[in-house]
Length: 343
Ligand SMILES: O=C(O)CCC(=O)C(=O)O
Ligand SMILES: [Fe+2]
Image (cartoon, rainbow, N blue to C red):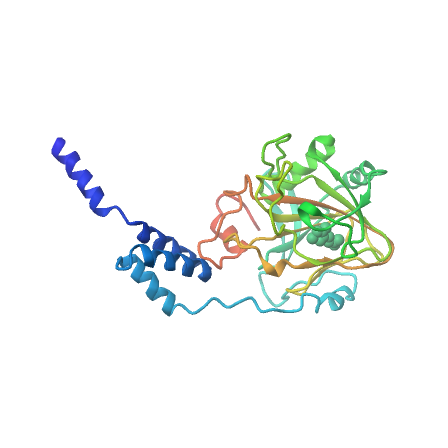
C-alpha cells in the first residue's frame, strides 16, 4: 500500500506539467479558436518560463505554420444603411438562394406552443416569428408605459442623449405585471433560453422589457447591442453579456422604420405582433460583428417596439457552443435534435 501510494506520488511529480507547458496548452486553445494574439502572448510567456518544453516548442511551430485568421474586413457599416432602408415594406433575407433560409414551425418547450418562423440569416442567426404576441399583450405593453416614456440614450454606463437614437422609451420588469411575466416565460419557451430576473441582487438572465416609441423621423443608427464594457452596477453587473436580442414589433409602420442588418443585407419591415430574434454572439461566444443593425427612420406613421435582451448568465448550457469553431446556430440545433424539436 505504502509503496503504491509512494509510487503514485513520484509519478505525479514526474508528470506534473510546468507552468510554461500549461500556458502553451492554453495558447493552443486560443490558436484553435482563432485568437492568434492571445496565443502569441501566452507563447511569449511560456518561452521564458520553459523554453525547451515540448508543448511550448509545439505551440511555437503551430504559430508559424497556421495561416493568420483573416481580419474582419473594415467596411463602412453605413454603406448599406440607406439602400436597405429604402426597400419596399417587406422582409429581405440575407441569401434567398440558401436552402436553409426557409419558413418553419418552431416548437417551444411547451407542446401547445408552435410558432411561425421565417429564417432570414444563418450566420449570424436571425429570424422573425409571426404573431408572437397577442393584441392584448401588445396593448398592455404600450398602455403600461403611458406617461413613463423618456428620451432614449446611448452608451451603457454613462449613457447620453444623442441624435444616434431618436426615440422615447420606458422599462417594464417581469414583476411589474402578470402579463409581462407571462410574456417573459413565452420568450423563454420559444427561444429555449433563460430570461429570469432574480431581483433585487441575483444575477439576471434577462433584461427588463424596453418599450420604445419612434415618432416621425425617429431612428436608431447602426450599432451592436452588446455593451463595450459590462455594466458596473445594478442587477446586470454579474449577468455577462446580451447574447441575444428579442425584439417585438408593437405596431405596423406605414412607411419606413425597418430594422436592417447592414453587414449581411437583411431588412425586416415592422409587422405588428411579430418578433425578431437574433444572437449577438456566435456559437463560440465571440461577439458577432455581422450583427451590426439599425432602426431606419420612420417616414409615415409611428413605430412601437419592445426589446428583451437575453444575458449569458443562466444560458451557458441552453445556448450550447458548436462542435467546431465555425458552427452555426442551425448546426447546433441539428446536434440537439433529440432534446429540442424542429421542423
Ligand atoms: O428600432 C429598431 O428597429 C431597432 C432597435 C434597436 O436596434 C435597439 O433598440 O437596440
Ligand atoms: Fe439594437
